[in-house]
Length: 147
Image (tube, rainbow, N blue to C red; front, side, top):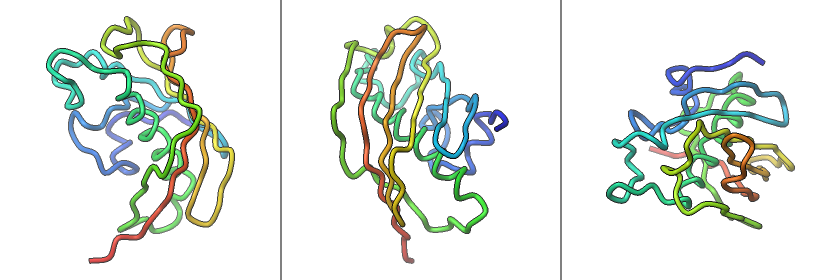
């Protein structure tokens, strides 16, 4: 499918400003999404701890990619009041200490392994220049928020 810009991602993510970590979606289909970002170099990144952006924050990057994918697949349905939660993580491997030290653009890949009524399981990988940063699996649960 076609690429999406950071501005277009606002349709699929509740995050605003610097907390919208993904810069663009390169490609997606029914099972996969590939996103890119340079926000790990932004000194205003809200996930920074002082000057450091710890590698564990990659989980938020992966979660946003999965959230965009779920949103893209469900964009013909009304998603007002719908919010996604990471319910669990498995087999997470972190290969770097800090994201801000990754010299190139990050690539975030997510592949849907399972789809239930309001739940999903994704395999995700974050890399730069072909080098792994983080891999793992995540369970995503959707919940309708009531006023």
